[in-house]
Image (cartoon, rainbow, N blue to C red; front, side, top):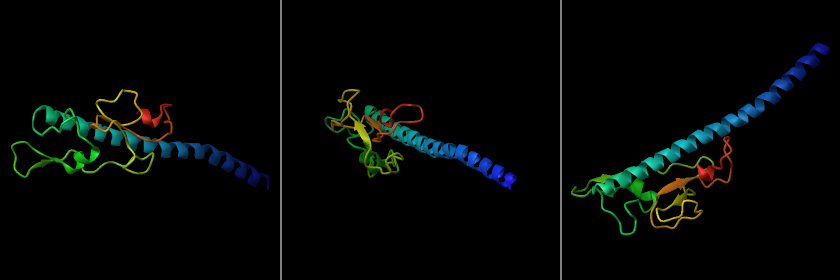
Length: 144
């Protein structure tokens, strides 16, 4: 009977130590997804800007060559000098894994202050998560 109690206590101790690891592994996988989504969107924004700087796509007034919103990157833009040819920079807007949807990204325009917390609406210069959580590295997701 004592052996059974000892085994049960050991199982409780092992389960108690494994639970935090499982919790952190879920959070870590969401953080990896967030980094990948931010990287993809930022690369698409940079590619859009590169195309506009080279004159390959028309520039909307007041956007300074940046996309006016994230949907432009998905819908695509007509290439200058090409008939019926669009350039798409994203297949779809990624889901923010910390929030759970693709509509709540925090956007910054080129005209906004670097520490601004709201989007000016002129163009999309940068993207952040709208989650109020803090990453395993101690930095809030909204600052990634």
